[in-house]
Amino acid sequence: MDRIYAIVNQKGGVGKTTTTANLAAGVAQLGNKVLAIDLDAQANLSAHYGYVCDASAEAGSMYEVLRDGIPIKEITMEVEDNLFLAPASLLLSAADLELGGVIGRELLLRKAIDSVKDDFDYIFIDCPPSLGLLSLNGLVAASQVIVPVQSEFLALHGVRQLLDTIDQVRSAYNPSLRVGGVLLCLHDSRRRLSKSVAETVREYFGDLVFDIIIRTNVALAEAPARGVSIFRYDARSSGAEDYGKLAQEVCLNDQKKGNIRRQSTP
Image (cartoon, rainbow, N blue to C red; front, side):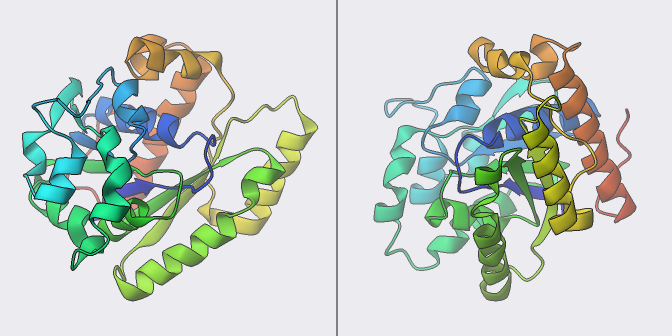
């Protein structure tokens, strides 16, 4: 399956979770069955969809999937039409310590996804803002990586390190892993700096950069408080327009590469 995307950037605040939540919802709106996996102990993706999983939750979370090997389908729930969530919990913060000595620890997520990957057209993994064991699991399980980059110069720092990490993961664990795209987020076209950074990113990464740019939009920040995607919160907002176009671009790219099982309906 070549439609497993890890959304990764070790820097926080670049729009990673916002992108995972709304890109997954946008792809689901195109008629695809989508699974969104929350691999971050902060559980922001889960909260974005209106779900909070604490240590006492009977349903379990990705922590139990990775640590105890429970089937991922046992914790999966439908949060919007065609869109399913495998939630995270704070317990994931102990994953690096608890799973550090496990043989094959970097393959735990891939094995968990193997049992459900044929049930979904797309899988999106929200990785934590670090390059630890959880992010490594996301990269090993994924076929493609999307790197959100904020339109500020400081946000560019570390992207080279991330690409080096992707190369290392490709060499050691996942030879088919590739960069599916670099995404410019939190872009304010009124600012000269944003335009300059966008030009620099396109010059440096070339065709890897998505055509669509995610503009700064207050509705994108408000939607998580309602526990819904941008499409349910404000379908007429620029945020919904941008992520809708990004979903179309991702699906079209996969269609061109022959990576999609069925035609998405716009």
